Each structure stands twice: as structure tokens, then as C-alpha cells.
Image (cartoon, rainbow, N blue to C red; front, side, top):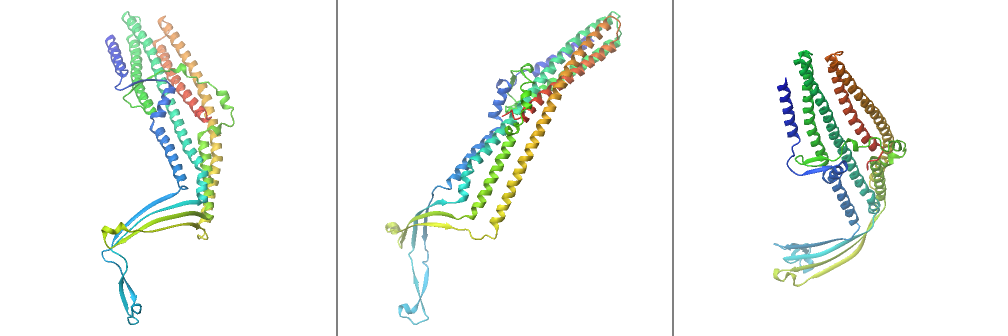
Length: 448
């Protein structure tokens, strides 16, 4: 039995050393805030949302550019392999009436160089586009904020998962240490004839199961570290060390003030995004209505024409032309297309208004649910703490009774099982409470 226990401890120590060995790559020591800031700079979803903000800014500049002068240059060259022929009435040249004389007009080489410009003077759609450019940029800025909030929530939960797994390993280590002592004592008592072999085997089975549980938990801890690295956008091969522990986490902070806030939904990024979409749909409706109004633009052109039968002398003589003018486009009738388009956009506005009202109710419901889950989680955590202490006390008394000969090894085994179960439930309740606190803060708009 001693050889078996020694071999088990050696394997466990080797596995622990393998798991904690530093991985290749850089090493970081992060708090929760450090992980969140790292995710803001490296998480692909956050980076892409930031690129969308830049793209929206360029889109706004593109829209503004539609109201600036539009200048274009043009150049052309023609080599008439056969100069076009035109038929003229014969009587122009003294020929009989009804006859035609073929005449070639033009030269072999022709070229034109010109520049034209247009300037928008009045366009209701352009004016509305300028009015909505701030709202358009705000939409992508809020989408960027939402991606950062999502990253912050996911990173915090992943960080807490690692802390809870570490806590679970500490509890397992404590149980393994005291159970190892109990195995040694029971083995010694068996050699002295005070206890039966079955008592030693029963405790050894429990010990081996606990060692196996610890090994599995260590592997899960390594996986949780990888999940945290994934959430912050860190390469898996990098080594990450957590600076904080569970004692640094304040589960009860600012809860009373949070749950009494009745206007929290206005801080929710989802509400802001829906508001922005509603405002943009109103601008779209206004833009479509503007299509009933005329548009006015100014235009100008200057060109040089070159013609010659000799290519070498083509550009020796130019024939310039230029003009300036105004273009007025007045919509008269479009087969009721514009009217029906206005009605469609008006319906879109109504739908977005309904969505905003529905979202307000949904956010209130979500907050109420998060509050209940949080308080239930706290109560369960406190209850599991008490159960854990009671189970530890029951185990202590059972061991004393067994050592004094007034109890059985079965009672000790059952007490040990109860303590392990209490530890597992405590760890689960601890994680649930931490996660519910994060969900509560998000539900009430405290994560920005």
C-alpha cells in the first residue's frame, strides 16, 4: 500500500510540474483590468469594430465630397482611316435636280482636350446627408463600445473561471493532505491489529479518487488559461500569470445603489444603438421626401479641338470652345414611385420606434432577472460556505470517534465524501456568484 501511495504522489508531482512549466513565448502577469486592456488592443472583434469606426469616418468624408466641385479632364484622338462621306444635293453645284454629289468633310486626324466642372448648388438629399453624418458616425462608435463591453464581460468571466479553478485545487490539496495523513494512520493501525484491512482499502479508494480529481482539475485549469488567452486575443503559446486572487474580488460592491436605479436602461449600449438606428431611419425618411424637390447644379467646360491631315502638324492649331451653365432638374411624375417609397420608409420608422419601446421592456426584464439570479447566487454561496464548515466539523468529529473506538470507518468515509461534495458545491456557487455579479453590472449598464 505504501508503494502504491508513493507512486501516486510521484505521478501527481510530475504532472503538477509539467502543467506549471513555463510555455514558449513571452510571459505576462495580468490583473483583470490588464487583461481587459490587452483585449481592447488585441481581440479581433474589438479591432474590427474600431476599423468600422474609421471606415464610417471615410464614408462621411465621401458624402461631404459630393457637395464639392467635381472636375474631370478628357482627351481623345481619332485617326480616320477613311474620312466620312456626305451626299449633297446636286443642284448646289449646278447638277440636275435629284442628283447627289459625294463630298468628304473633315480631316484624317482629330484630337480633343478638355476639362469640365460641376458644382452642386441645391440638393435636399445632400443636405439631409450632411445633417445625419454625426448620427451615422455615432452608430459605429456605439457598435465599437458594444464590442468592448462584450470583450470585457467575456474576459472577466474567463479570469474568474481560472481563479475558481485555482481555489478548487487548493481545496483538493487540503483534502488530499489530510486524507493522506488518515491513510498513513489507518495503515499503521492495521499493522498493529487495531483496524481491519477493509478500513485501509476504503480510505485508499477515496484517496486515489481524490488524486484523480485533482489531476483532472489541473488539466481543466490549463484549458481555462487557454480560454482566457483566447478571450483577450493572446497567442496560446504565451505564458500568462494572474496577479489577483479571489480575495481581491468584491462581490457585494455597489449593489444597493445599482438595483434602485430606474433609468439604467439609458446607459445600456443596446438602447443607445437602437436609438441611433431610429434616428437614422428618420433621416432616411427625410431624404426620400426631399426627392420631391428640384435639384440645381452649375457646370462649366473648356476644350481645345485639333484637326489636320498631317499627324505632325495636328497640334499646331487649336480651336477652343467653352461654356458655363446651370442645370435644373424638376421631378414631375415618377409613376408614384417616390410616394410609395416614402410610405415604406415611414413604416421603417414606426418599426424602429416599436423596437425601441420593446427593448426598454426587455432590458427591464433582463435587469430584474439578473438581480434575482445575483441575490440567489449570494445566498447559495453563503449557504455552501456554512455547509462546508459543517462538513469539515463532521469529518473532524467522525475521525475522533473512530480513533477512540466509538465510531466506524464508514462514518469517516461518509463524512469525507460529504466534505468533498460541499467543496464542489462551494466552488460552483462561488463561480455562479461571480458570474452573476458581472451579469448584474452589465444589465444595469455599469460596464461601459
